[in-house]
Length: 243
Image 1: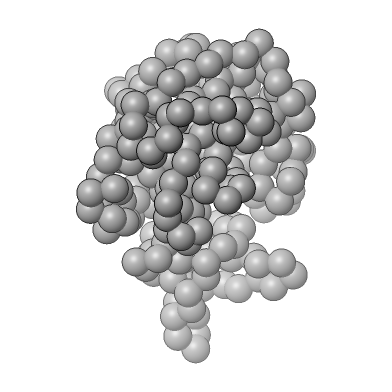
Image 2: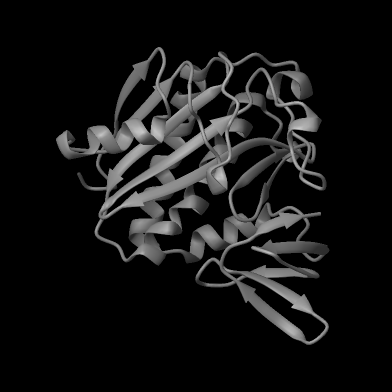
């Protein structure tokens, strides 16, 4: 199933997680597939954290097969983030209120409205996406210092169904996947930086038990965060970022 082939869709009433369902279906697929669930019983975010999944929000996964090295395949998180922002902009007409938080969150008025979880098993990649369309976790449910969760409904007054959101998201992702296949990461990097939250400002990047503070200088050609510290710039391939 070529990554740039047209993607199919399936809508489920409930599932443990759309990524888990993606891996179950992957051996039988002949092309990319979007899986959309109205509800998840065991949704998860980064570092296996639970992802609250009340009905009405968006829980989806794009399942695709690729022939890329793992590091290149992982760059599709940027394609997904850009596609999310494009979908939000198209559906709300408010592009200025959305920004991108490295490595894979979308912010609305500075609060987290969407997250992305990439998981791979061999040549199969599942791009899991959760969007707070109508509800967001309470502030007390996130760790201290993390970005406050928000919903599209609470911030804009717009009520958008998951199916309608997928229409916009799938079209936007197909466009970024095509650019990635034809031109590589460079155009994605440029676009991400154009909408990156806190670019040029002080941030904290936590990797395991180590937290480093510095200025978010840029993203390099491999997607690493470049953090300028007192001793000079440091490339960080993966971290949790706090503002």
